[in-house]
Image 1 (cartoon, rainbow, N blue to C red):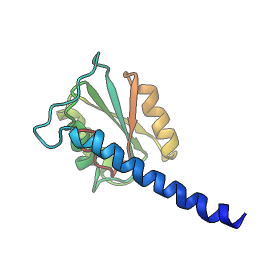
Image 2: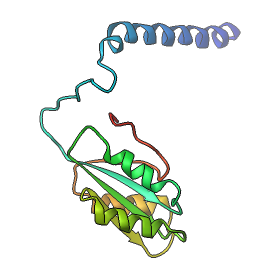
Image 3: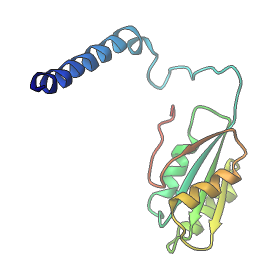
Length: 143
């Protein structure tokens, strides 16, 4: 039994390393990278909703929304759900929503938690695909 306890994790770690190197050599190495890489082509152009629950995120929410809107994929909407913030998050979101057509803002009267904010955003989404991020997360433009 002691041999199994030692050799099985050792064997599996070698398998993961070999598999990772194989994937990089035969697949990932040939993918186009960088700013000039073409965006992936899809068979159809499904819409995507990016849901951002925000609770007291006045320091981060503007940068987070701009990063979400900077996607190279163009058929997106961003839904920011203000989860009863007590700071200036509400005012920032309202100002941004007036200027940005792809941004929708939902205000909850009181803090109900991240799960309820995400559920509210998902119910309001018009897209068939949802992406959920935190109020302080920055998406890469190819995410």
